[in-house]
Image (cartoon, rainbow, N blue to C red; front, top):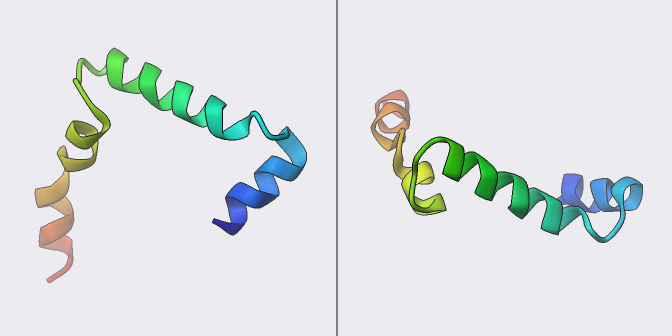
Length: 51
């Protein structure tokens, strides 16, 4: 959260929209249908690391 506020100081109030647009392009490029699918794509990998 602090990094987002700092980024907004330097990049301006359009930063959140640019982040969302970039994430949408990434999801589309990877052939995914949603951010949820991206988030869950490596869930098993991280679950194993927790142990």
